[in-house]
Length: 345
Image (cartoon, rainbow, N blue to C red; front, side, top):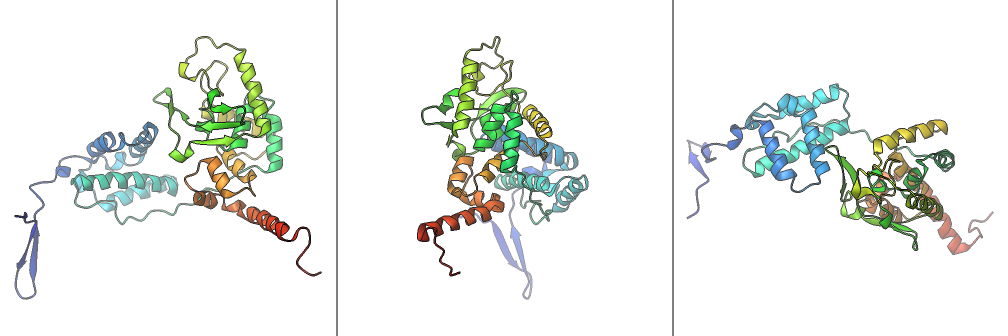
């Protein structure tokens, strides 16, 4: 016999009482939001995401959610409480993008609370989020890249920065390259891992997503640079290597340590100043590589960058689409009519 979960009781003319059995108590009424978030991170998040992602979630909640809401009982949390927290974040000068990320993490946590039957309704439903202004993408022009490389290649950081702008790899990807990833005969490099620093220790991790594991065709001048670096490294010995697993890293410090992206970014900014170029982020070299590929098939660009889909590439680099379309139109016209014009003079 099926268990009764509710009753409908007549209370007079066209009046009814609906009674729903919810159990003796909700466990969520006994724990604070802080206690719940600890449990959620440990049992629901940590087993299914990369360690870096779990740390990002924890850090975001610790900075923006726990200070104002952490001591509240989970079941006592109301949408207005969360909305006020988001407003306070905006008043502190945080971007709509940061608020949006925080909301996404908290929404995931509250959805799990619903699944675990700790809540009857999510306190983050129906909230008003600030508009997220799209980050203005910055990239160097062809002439600026020439000027940049002229200065960069005269420094010890020239090879790694040249690879960055030529391949469009993410910093964590090119800093995690090993010599075994390079196929000298085919002039390709395989992106199969990323290098990150977690809890004060260097470690290798999977790429951002499965599609990020990819081969990249190297330009001939990059092969020459990498081969020269390889020949230099094989004639050098690094005593007391502090990172045995990284002894075959392509890019590392003089002392043998893995190269830190933040430190590299500082050297990158110095090079930009010497070259008298606009100040952009290290990550913008990835955007520069994509922009330089204008006219190349978006599918090829998407594969080289390791994007989730070609549609994402097209959306992200819509600003270079006119150039792609112009070149495509010219090529098609040349195929159809050669150098002859179909328009009468």
